[in-house]
Length: 148
Image (tube, rainbow, N blue to C red; front, side):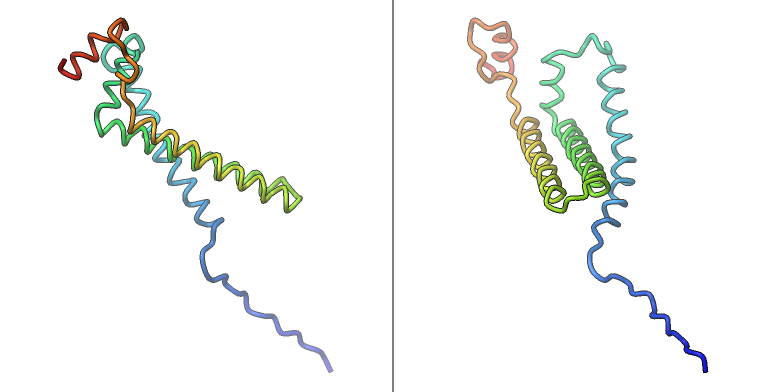
């Protein structure tokens, strides 16, 4: 008489798979980030006067248009989430203590979230004339912008 062992069928995990979607996000965001970063570098360093045109007025001009605001915010969001997800993967791979791993993943999420919030606020609330007084070097530019 021989004993036969039944092999249980493989079970598929149901529900949301964070690791799978993290992997997909890293590939997709990496491709989009390459386009955003090289576009950013091309516009800032090669178009017009190149690097010699980079000054406060150049940045103020870029942040005055919604296209460049959204371009920079998308680049900021994707870069921070991409980097935080990569760090989360490293923490999950190399930190063996469960409490330390949980604390580090939370710290990564909170720091990325805070930087995303602050960066977005800077881009959308940027005012080049904030704090400029009549004796400032920028007074004539700000007066022309405001129309005074």
